[in-house]
Length: 377
Image (cartoon, rainbow, N blue to C red):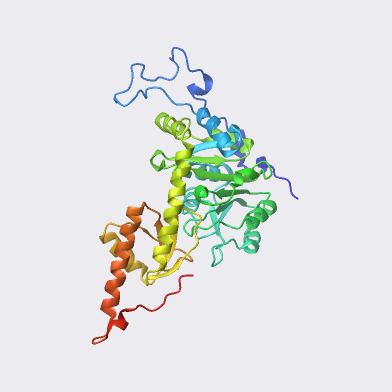
């Protein structure tokens, strides 16, 4: 098996780059007369807290608290401004514009493609199979010597399903000249271990997670990247000096002391996911409800565009995914609270009832009110 060498993967100038050294890099103590960073010594203009001092540029307090929860070492953690920051940094660290490429498997999270475009990096697309699984043979054929990054979203967005572990493992073992990134934004809603358990086995593995979903901290914009200590050092070298604000760090530290509350919210969301799927299955307008390991459902309707527009009129907001590859006629529905889910269902039920009445031929009796059976595979 070909050995993995990170230095062969990085852009040459990244290897020799001298990172910016901030005031908080040069002195990491918490006590002293701080006259080194040109901060405002008097305080802040807000009444909600003192934010006049720069935050820890490496967020060590969070990493030390997060590491045992995730079963990794603090040195294996990078924290970013959402997952979008490590996505972009990984591209910039490895892909030479107009020369290298990265591989994605649509339908998938759109920021991989955006980051490729922003950085002028060729995008190689190998679609998932019709059941939203990896076409392993096609992926292996598409990889070449310029393939620096391979993106796997599991549970996948927008389909919601986990990708088969054997396919991911095959790619990890075959693509030793590439970084293989498993994006696990929705892993808390899936009944499977995280790929973080395999970090020490696969030096080319990167795992992304987020505080936005299960932890309920989307407004904070805090993403997690887990990788080898060597790669984390590279990401720290090229990131902005103070990429995570002091309020975000403080609130994240507090959240990590309430893991049981996160687990309870996940339990409630899973209960509501099952409730929503069962109720949707009985609607005549629903064609397919795809299996989900996430906090949303991908649902195929008989008139996705019309239903989407009517839901908007009723101030029920879902995502129209009908133009996305393999998602024809589909809406992506986030799992809400019981009240929110019932509101959605009531609007859909009213639409179905109206549609049945409108479609009745004149003079038909009560039997004509019964809708035709619908496949909900």
